[in-house]
Each structure stands twice: as structure tokens, then as C-alpha cells.
Length: 217
Image (tube, rainbow, N blue to C red):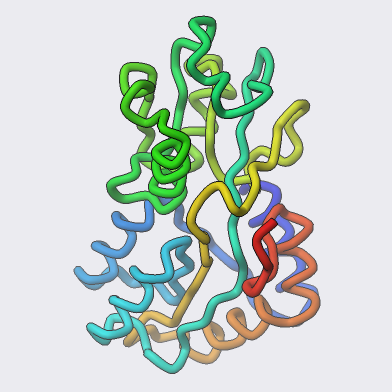
């Protein structure tokens, strides 16, 4: 498990909850799995609209849907983090990893940020699209990309990583809900309550997320 999920697992167990098992993937891929009946209990997603759409289609119980945190983008390079986004055009930076914006919310936010900066079209030849935020991070971590733009939760402990301004990209509202028909509904409800509790929020924020109502800055 990544540090944030490991902390959540320990914190939830300390609160009396059962062991957690996380399944990772792009938001779009996991949503399709839920639509096809995958036996998940809780769906946590960085795209609030996907969660709302699943609830509207009754794949998630509508009353359980809640926003539990706000995500932010970070940028990092294993051999040096660019001083600013404009520096991504430097010839020394050959490959830039981001999650695929077609099905990953953090990738969509990265694309929007680069579009706002007028860099998206020019950087196309450099972009290395990953299946999800974790794969994007691994591309840089293993040296297969010179720079990565991904979730701050994955970068915050990397030397030289830089948190990008919330105002530079659309809000990334992390939301979740209970999968309809789960055989573990009481436990699913207990876990969502834990996420929203002071203890859960403390873990999320220590892990690189921000309050659901965090103001842009």
C-alpha cells in the first residue's frame, strides 16, 4: 500500500473497523467495473461527476454519496523539478508523465492546467500517458519520464516536489459512495463515516489531501 492507504488502514482499525483492501485503477475503469457488477463495497473517486452519475444510475446508493477531500496536483522530476510550468518546454525535458486525461481525473486536471497556460498543444510530443496517477508517478520514479504531474499525495515526500496552486487547475473534489447491493453495507457506512471523522480527515490531510471545502490559493 502507498503511505496514505496504509495510514487509513491503521487508523480505521484503531477506530474499531475491519481490515481494508484497496483496489486501484483509473476512475473511469473502476466505474465501468461497478456498472458491470464488480463486487466492491465503497467507491472512492477523484471525479465527483462520475460518482454522481453512478448514483443517478443506482450503482451507488444516492444518500451515501459524499465529498470527503479536495485533491491537488504536484510536479516532480527525479533529476530536478522544473521551476515553473513554462519550463516544461525546455529541451532537456524529454518526457512528461501524466495520467490519461480521457479517464483519469488528475490527468484531466493536468490537461486543463496546461491548456490554461497555453502549453498543451506544444507539449504533445513529450507527453507519456499513464493508465492512472500511480503509473504516472512510477514512470518518473523509475526514470522512464523526466517529469511527472500527478496527485500531490504521491509526490509530497519526494525531494524537490512542488505543490501546484489550486487556482491553476479545476477543483479535484474527491467523492465516494456505497456500491449498491454490497453484502457489507454496515461496514461500508462505517468506513465513510471514518473518512469524514476528525481522525479520518487528519490522516487524509497528512497524506496530501485538503478539506472538501478548501478555498483555492
